Length: 308
Image (cartoon, rainbow, N blue to C red; front, side):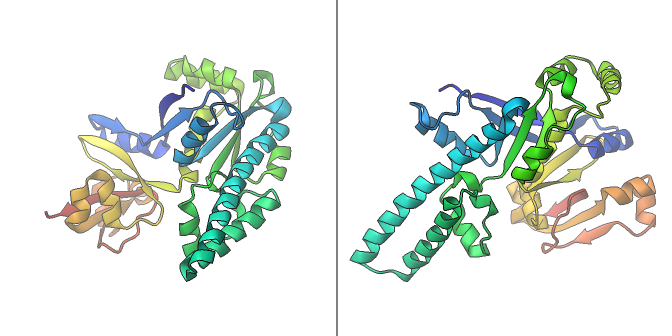
């Protein structure tokens, strides 16, 4: 089975605004890597290869046509649930055998967790909808359950239906992030230069390419936020896990920053835009110095001080 790899920049209007302010030599957006599977038949000869790709993925994106969206999505999620159920049953079988030989309280806790997962799967519900406590959530992730991964649904519609909302019924049945697009239209947009893109989208009543929205949706589904570094050399967006501390955010740039973290100088994107410039921002007293316990928020503009 041959897969296709690709990477997309995550469009962020805040970066565009910062570029107009700082006029840097270089601009860098965050990126998301996609792996396109040519086939999704978990009962076919490529089953093992497909499962490996899915287990290694951080998030799953399912694309379907509008005419059979509901049944197609149902089949996809059912396949994930069946795969997880097979894993659960096999693990429970091994736990039962091992507990008979030598009882372990730790393994017994694992058994209770796996049984909890099994009950959810038996009612044909994905494990992403199962309420698990902190330690349970952590333990469950080690199994790489497919139905526990974040899922995005993409409904591909004909160009003449792009203004109709064909996702409502699907959304009622499947409470997952969903986006509607026309692959034909997106292909046309991608082949135009920026000026022609704007004119074409205005004619079609489209604010921006749907792929931009899909990338941002995927970004959020991964639990990521962006912080920025700014200057004449480069304006850059950096991805970091939500609820990360300042040293952890620094590590995204370089491991030395986390290791030798001293402080982070921070101001908010929204405050900068309101003030109009860094110098005016400092006059308002909204330029902050943060320690290692500071939790980085989306839109923070950071500069790190470290010593190694």
